[in-house]
Length: 330
Image 1 (cartoon, rainbow, N blue to C red):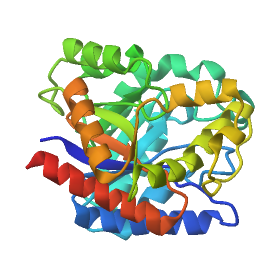
Image 2 (cartoon, one colour):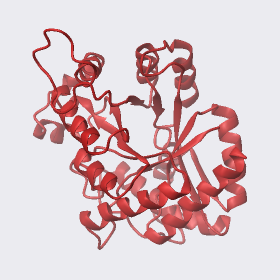
Image 3 (cartoon, rainbow, N blue to C red):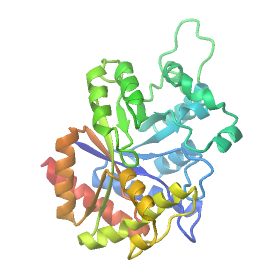
């Protein structure tokens, strides 16, 4: 059976603020727990006025404290921005507070621009050490070895599960070689989805953490009463993507009736390419789209983004998605 999970972008809306967005994330996670979602992840982004999850481990703690059973984690931590020891301590602390419920997804990209990367005091070449940093982090979270002088406290012997995140074959191959679960970011970069999945599965080597491949696929899903309503709700994410193309990181905007009046033909082409892994429509339309996606990808798990502006309508969309997944599982 394919599991279903949530990636919350923790969008800051027009006329909103970070506190509202973080509390909405916590509320969504509490609902998702009852709807059968497996995980609730948030991602590290910096210097983005429209996203409130920059201090990702703090945001995870806030959400985990408002839930009881759902796994909460990072999708992901951009490891080149940090020392492995600091991340081991942060996630070891989270695991101490919420035992058995914390996930640590790791990305190689900085999650920001080069100017902000310098403000983070990280060298642009830090990403080159990503494989070694993953192994160092894994060791810090693993069993204490004889003579080990540097320990993550808390963190040592917590064995917080690691995931590799990516949008290319690099991360797929690394996850396979390290025997870790893999999450592909097809919700915003779908071009190499099928190549990456094949690379991961063909190169997978069993490890202590993962005996068999576990492939997670990111997908944008919005469910409305009708196809037309869902397409209107989806204009919020389309505008956010357009702003990203323009270098404008403004807060999330309410949906509009005519998206073609908002973007240029070239922006439309690029945005539609980035959002190519999207299923938008009525419950029946989304069910048909999900059946096709699962058949094509053979995904073990879906990481779902339902980027709806209004919080109540977003809750409704996620509840409907869970209902559809339960029907497919049955």
